[in-house]
Image (cartoon, rainbow, N blue to C red; front, side, top):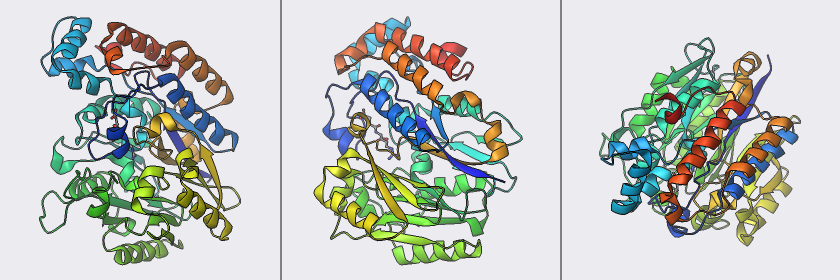
Length: 448
Ligand code: SUG
């Protein structure tokens, strides 16, 4: 049976702004308070989706969330009408209003961890929504994420959904940003690679000193248990704490994998040799030939990797067996990274082409091509069971482009977030979107 890796890209929401909300994420901190352009951000994302569709990949779309999150502000003690809640928050606690307005759900690599049916004990595709509890503005995403994923992958015969892990730092879970799957082909049993930043319960593991390690070992282990993965089908590895302290807040900022290939920086992991040997052994037992490409620090320093997002790229398998790397424009403007990429494609190895995309609006908040997509490997019958409203087509691309041009502002500053009109604009846009994508009622304003 045919199988596919479908990339579901997050559609950027109408409140996209630079709130400086993510300590440990260099771009988010350094672009704080700049004016954003939500319309351009959404159109840049749609361009990438269209380009992948045009190249023959199956491409999906994941809806943004309702923002400002008035319910979150109410839970923090702001009362009255919705407009009064926003007005009071703006007056008394601007950082909380900014957090409740974040369009961070666009980085859907953090929405959930997904295990394809070939890996799971019950033969269904499993989803666990990520609790994202390291940052308040992201911790409020998972209830709506669960409803949206439920509306996209509704058939219980094929799809199993798990609620987010307990919302405490000990189970900090950032979803697929710290999870990669290797396999011979998407429909065959593979090896799922979980990369954690620290252990919450075992003090013998080192931890970063400056920035938070968002993913814990215990969270990764819980997700693997929930999904019914076998010991033969999982590898757990610790991220190098020293690179977290240099701004590598998720593993997908320093490594990316696909098929039988892991593309990673020399400094990405602790005990690298042991990790690679375990991946090799477990994949070999599955009949797959694991291969890794290690980028040496003397060619690309960690700082260059963080600035350019070289590893936050999409590694895609083409029909002829070669691989394509989708990178952000920032890789071309960094001479060392660009030179490395030229040598990579000239080497005769598995990566034969690099394509560059302008995702500057998202990049300025620390979100590259890989952050913007959630990968779901599906067999033909499973793909047929996905809500067809969320699969990209030329017609849907046209409709979404018009929808963005109708509803989105082209500039947003912190002071605009207090405008009660923004809430109405967002709700009007999202109400229309749920009809376009045939999602039903998924937003708090639609169900309460
Ligand atoms: O969680 N940025 C996101 C970026 C997420 C990138 N995702 C992956 N690497 N998979 C984060 O730090 C910034 C929001 C702001 O500052 O306005 C933010 O949330």
